[in-house]
Image (cartoon, rainbow, N blue to C red; front, side):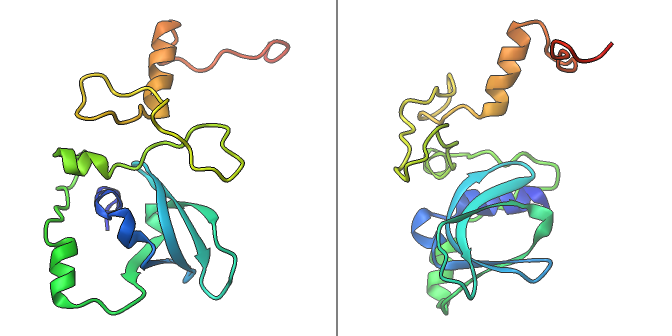
Length: 167
């Protein structure tokens, strides 16, 4: 499956269903999913546990090319499948999978606040939001970094060498 399709599926899954899924990697590692923390173009960040272990809450940075399949841990009736996945639209190859409605925008996984280490749930209301967008989605770090580089006149060049490095 293409990266765009995996990303669209990950964004589509409501949080109430995420803990009922299991993910299997191409190496055969099975991960019992707890939640999807972040969805990017090439990878996603998930919280879960390795199947067969009791250690919950581990965080995995998982490239889409390493995902073999995603499935349910419990049987799913046909009517439940239609209710859950009936409206899923997989983007065409090469298309960017952005939310198309306000309901879809709410399911975009926000970027966690930096420095949250006490186990508390981060507050996303303090993060800057995309100007002109529907709702108040947090700005992705890559977009902030691009604006910072453009403001400093270093939009596309390599980073400056540190003092004492180079020639």
